[in-house]
Amino acid sequence: MKEKKNIIKNPDPERVAILRSLPLEVKQTLSGEEAASFINNEPLSESLYNKLKDYLVPMEE
Image 1 (cartoon, rainbow, N blue to C red):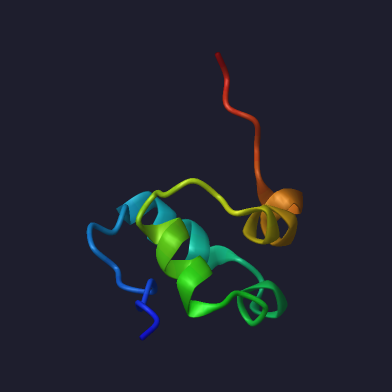
Image 2: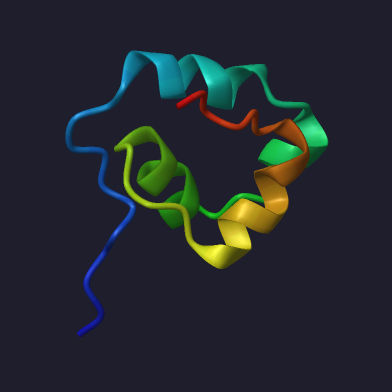
């Protein structure tokens, strides 16, 4: 049986706000697993990165 990975464990409030602020056409492309991964502050998968790359800002060092 396949394990469900779209469980939100400890949602990061900033990431929830970011996800909510994305354009609808971007949000519609995200799977439940990708959204949960993003909200849980897990590393971005390649497919999730490709969907969000136009909205990401590099971190300052």
